[in-house]
Length: 258
Ligand code: NAD
Image (cartoon, rainbow, N blue to C red; front, side):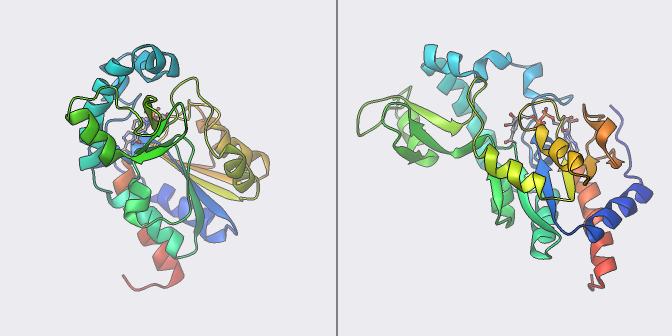
């Protein structure tokens, strides 16, 4: 796929929306992290071009915990080495400037927090932690990686011997914190969507809630998304470039020296 340049008129329209909003939020997906070297699921280089999505279901985990953890260990090597990119930093800066109030993310990589975002809702959990499926005790993922690398696959709970599971939401499990995210969306008058195909529900309801309450929807994504028809502004280019330009435009309007 050829890479599109960001259209500066669209960037300006998005800046107008954000500057005029009283309560804007960001909603992000795997596409914000591809420039950090983490493959998305459904994009052209997506994980599901290589693996069957079945491997990320709760049924697969429960029936084949060893194979699941071998796959996950390999995936964690990429995710743990990743650093935030300029799109994550721009989102954090927009929060510091008071332009966006919160980030609702589908990602489990922790890169928003690493970039300095404070108010982050992780709808699909975090891969920085694992949880015992028997007693609920949680473990930092570093501890779990040591267990795996010393041959304990699947890794087990020190307390009760139960099997540990990444504290992420697998297909077939309920999302986390959805009520809080929904309330935030319903009180928002703008949402900045970055790097999501908007095809995974209930997460993709977030921009729909904002739209239904009369708010504006900005979508930054390299390809068309399933909710382009509700967007007020569509910016079809890479998130890093788009967010750098958007932050610059917003700062200019706020009269901030760059
Ligand atoms: P998705 O794979 O369905 O869609 C990602 C979208 O981002 C695609 O449409 C793609 O074209 C676009 N994209 C890719 N690189 C981009 C870039 N540099 N700039 C702009 N757009 C870009 O991802 P989704 O919508 O987040 O789907 C949800 C699922 O993906 C969730 O379940 C989430 O937990 C999971 N996921 C998370 C991570 C992560 O934590 N980084 C990685 C892979 C998948």
